[in-house]
Length: 206
Image (cartoon, rainbow, N blue to C red):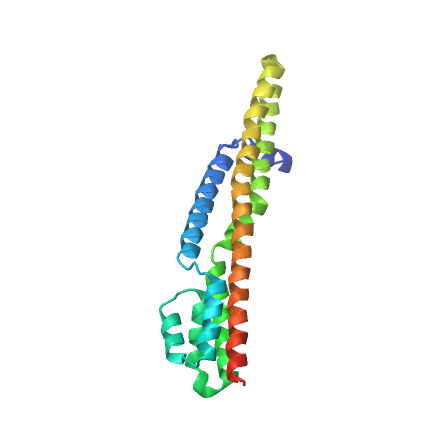
């Protein structure tokens, strides 16, 4: 069988399956966006106030109060302090290594799902374009098999095919916006935790 004819037969299966694929990807994208929003909302923190409180407690050598403050707080800023204080009897090197190790694992926790949003943002328009190309091929093939249908039938088929491109963009735009927003948030939270790590190590290096 001619390879061109083989691919043409595949294209003539229609673009409906591409639209269904985009619908599924859209549901996946929205689910991740909502899950990440709830996740980050659960660990909100006033970092400026928290940072000042850490400094004051360290200056007053109130380690037990500091441990109590951070123990039940799930934010990375608080948990990095908890990891460091747990190793203070082993020296600042052990404290620093413990906190650095925690931040590596925590980054993976914070980044969960973002790679999917990034992938959808980059590739959903191309999936939609693929559906449009299939629709255009189908429309022109229908015209070739029924010339009497005229250009109106072709235009109708092309307009329907362009829906796939529109849906692809509809999936991609929210995914890109969410990916950029969450990615910036992850970087900021890790930078906050890194600054507190340095504060704690500097205090015990004195």
